Image (cartoon, rainbow, N blue to C red; front, side, top):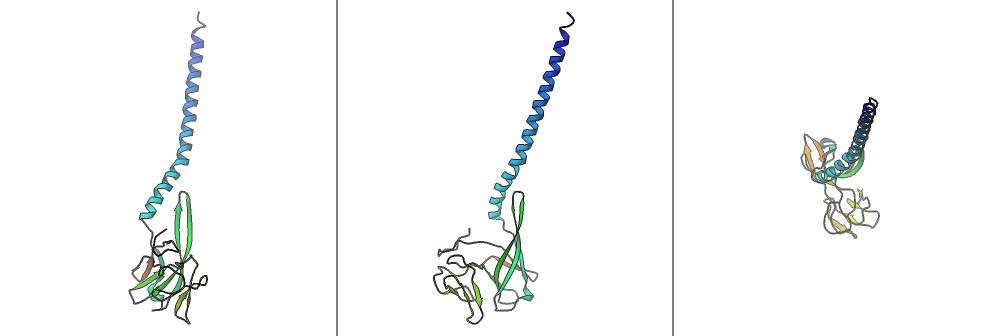
Length: 178
């Protein structure tokens, strides 16, 4: 009769081990799920915040820009998507009008998205793809471009030109951010 309490003790110990292993495996599954799910939620939240909050990037020192002449300037910005951090190289056209006033144009033609160039002989921006021509102030002078050159948000802070990079839909008369 004394044999009967021992099997119950062994059975209780096995049940406790089983419960522990189930709890351990469940915990591991939850942690793995969080590792996968949290970056997904962060990416969703960041994409909505990114639309509201745009970063200012340093483009140039105001004192180094010639007055009244367009300068093609390249600058780097950072993009973040979940765990991935990328540095992106952008190009813009900067025109200094006065010691405190500057205009920054997107380098992308409003017709079909080609990169246009400045021609110092004619004093115009010219798109090599479909012959759109733009004035120094961005107005369309000729060609199929549906709107003037796209300006980017710009500010001057302590002699430094800062810009917010944006892309716009091409081929339409309205300036719509992509």
